Image 1 (cartoon, each protein chain N blue to C red):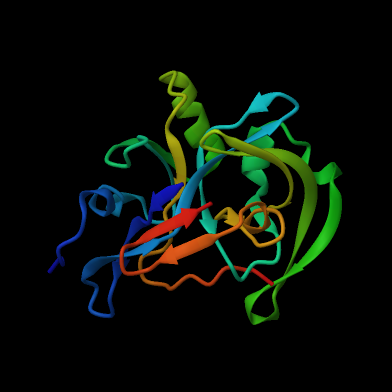
Image 2 (cartoon, chains in turn cyan, red):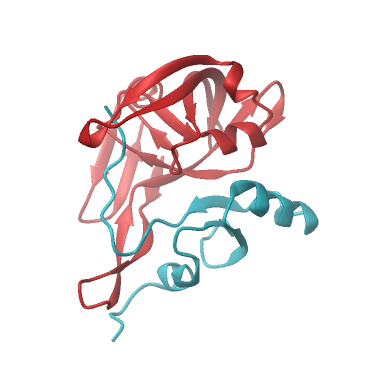
Length: 68
Length: 135
């Protein structure tokens, strides 16, 4: 069963633990990969300069950063 | 400046998918006149300094390992190595020079108090509205 989630969240479901490049509005994944380098290469190949890089955190873990 | 939190999927203990929202904001780094791609960085009031993935620094052209090496202590007493660089950080049309620690053991870019929060008079987390306001 899937709870009601936003479109912005829904499009990220295939990309757990991956880097994605989102459209500035956040409603489209323009490129994805396991590393930033891989995503950057895909963006270069489609001459996309305004996509926003985002790391998709694991879905089944909470996140507490390293902050000291 | 106002930014909406970014929703990320979440699985509960039954494997059902929902979502949680994080105060990610889109920033860019500039190093040696080279402009980096926009990246979502997490506003982390618990972080003393800025901490970014080394791979992002290298995309901007920073020779990360030539920076000053520091040890960064975090949750659970884990220490990771970082390399400090001075870069220009842009948030929309506002830019300022700041120091960022880059680490090969960090995935999510973190914006901390010294180096980001201290460039603003107010950083307001509106949790119920899922909005952060910087001024």
